Image (cartoon, rainbow, N blue to C red; front, top):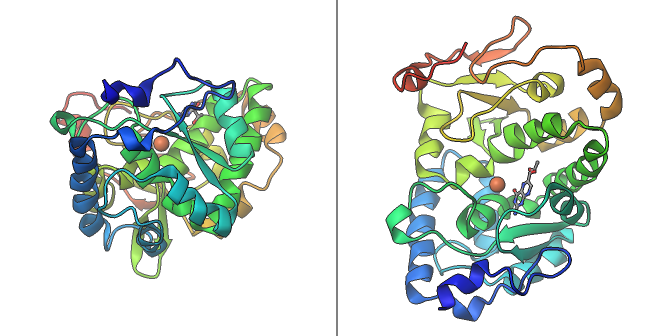
Length: 288
Ligand code: HBI
Ligand code: FE
């Protein structure tokens, strides 16, 4: 069955990549991409950083079906030296970081079924490619992702992966940024989700707090629902500067500091919006 070829572990290479087998996507799988892309693009119009949609166009990933990674790579390679490589699912942390450190983005190549358009537990090609790849055309963001990979390889050996993973979570996956036109989305976990695109920006429930590296690395996160707190950067240049620091020193300093719960606000926070918490309270799962 060609459906499973995109999750096939049998021809896994040493770096956990596989061939994308682009020719094997069915019409229904291409249609699923189109449905997802065609509803995200208008929703993101005034909500995502403007370069995101420009890059979606530059990479022709708006409505044509599941992108062929070979075509994406022609554009990416020429612009920022990145490549997308196909993987059958989650890969081990060290492998993931090694790819990023070498400007390769590991993208899952299977796509969710039409029956689970809005909810899935693991990343698929729509999340990985539509969510993550457009901003790899931004030179500053592209460098940040590579530096994160290098930092991950280091943190792995220092027992600090849990902390560094929070930085990825609250920036690359669920980051917001300030712009002249107000708050904008840049996190892939938001940009690839219809529900969270609206929730993260428009809903009164979540906190929106100014980005602070140490604060972020001390903050737990939710993996099973919308976030209770979003952190807000001041553009990619500011993010890069904030993370051009000696993480080893910071990890050491953080050893005795307590963690924050996902919805908690600290006295020292720059609070842009104090969330009502209503969304998560309504589910009976409120945190401090
Ligand atoms: N593998 N394919 C894939 N995609 C990810 O986002 C990913 C992964 N392996 C590990 C991982 N992420 C995380 O450990 C890091 O983000 C911390
Ligand atoms: Fe992701």
